[in-house]
Image (tube, rainbow, N blue to C red):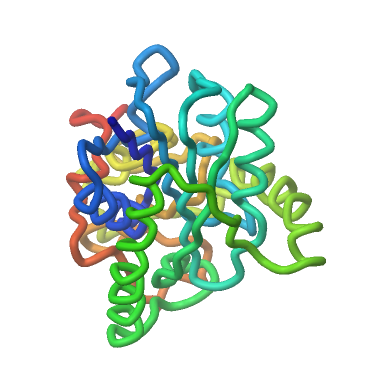
Length: 263
């Protein structure tokens, strides 16, 4: 039995989950959503989607992936979301998309991982980060066992009534994210390395005179800001004095989609 783990990640939390889950499963393959299209998606008996929670729901890139990927009514589908706070209703959102295309979501798990959205807050202190990592690894053994056995499970989300209005919040937020990149700017300390353009999952950054320019199709994953080696990228004024974060087992090269930046 083969398992494909489709992951989306900007700073490594979801990738770390995908890697650890793949290690706990037999014959599992890691597939980054940002690098595949409908005609390139490999078939598998069991298919998982691993992603962060965005505005109490699915990231736009994940919802779009689910709408376009081939769906097999006989496949075992599952989701693994991660968040630093309130989960919202991402699994129900995924279930609705899959159901409309003839698929069935067997289970949806939610894991708590360190905060990585500097627009809202600083990263967790390192002891709290490690606590998240340890708890995640502890839970994955049971999740892997359920996947191996093809078991159905509950959708781990917020309680009623919060999950009722979570889809509306997500819909409104995702619509705003694309053009919210107008708040990004780059300081004079920029080394003109082009890494920001290379790690952007949706090719939203063009280099103009070797400096990044955002093209208004942003996912708000913050990969450009978090992976800048000199912290030259800012979002408004709120990130100026905030620390950067990426999962300690991730490197920028894990997220590079194109070796030659556009521009």
